[in-house]
Each structure stands twice: as C-alpha cells, then as structure tokens.
Length: 187
Image (cartoon, rainbow, N blue to C red; front, side, top):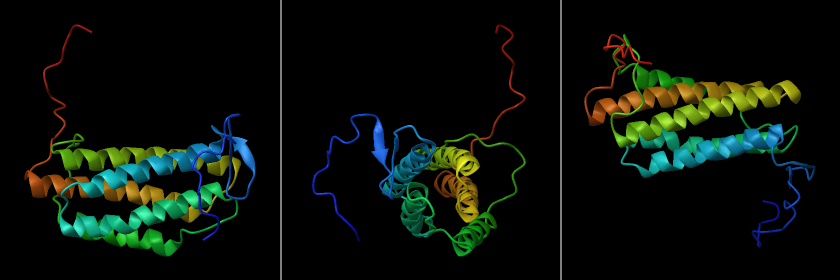
C-alpha cells in the first residue's frame, strides 16, 4: 500500500479540484469524479444494507462486493488501471441465478419497500443503476474496462433479486404495483 493519509484535510481541493490516482488534478465535478463518487455512495449504501439483519446467505454474498466496488472506484480514479474481470461478472451471474431460482416469476411490477431492509436493498439497487449510468458517461469520454460496466449492470440486477428474497423471507410477500387503482381525475 502506498502513502496512508495521516492528515485528512490538505486544502488542495479548496480551488474546486481534486487529485486522481495518477496525480492529475481535475475539477471536483469531472466525469471521473462523478463516476467514482457515485460508487462511493453505492458502497456506503451497501454498508448500510450489511448493517441490517440479513439472512446469512445474503450477507455472505454481499460482503465481497464492497471490496470489489472499492476496486472498481480505483479503476475510475486511476486511468488505465483494471481490477474487475470477467470472473467477477460471472460470479455475480452465478449468485443471481442461485437466488433467483428460489423466487416465483414476476407477473407484476413490485414497489421498492415492504420492510426496512428490503427498502435499503432497493436504494442500493437504484444507486447502482446511477453508478452504471455515470460509468457509461465516463466510458464515452475515456474508454473504460467493459467488464466494470457489466459488473454494475449485474450487481443492480442482483440487488433487485436480493430485495425480493429479503422481503419474501421477512414478510412473505412483496408490495405489488396496483396499476388498476382508482384514478384521481383532478390533476
């Protein structure tokens, strides 16, 4: 490991810039910073999710992903660096298939929520989708590792499936969207 932070504030960002992993200074709202900042937000929600009372198999599936999200943030912060591989994507797909096979097929849209832990999982899913969008924006300007973007796509799918698993194990049912509800005519 390189230099450890011994002093948290440096004042170098007071001019609206920040340093990338290679030392390059960029604006704090640069596309790279937006991408890895959104990953940091996602990782924080993953931490919140892991702080919940999760089924052990769900918790053990999620724990490695926090480390991998940090690795992925390093890819976005350090031009040319690659950490996520096809094996990471395949592991997510295998995990997704394993959890999804226990669920009944969806016939209706489900609403995010039901229980606190399922809602937190849905928040992580939506932040993951935003991280994927930020990754695509970054990729269009600075080509990225394609496996990293696939990883985010699969992770958001997995979080959707895990929210369903969690809700069914905790409450037995999911909250379904009622598309045939009475319409409010005064808009």
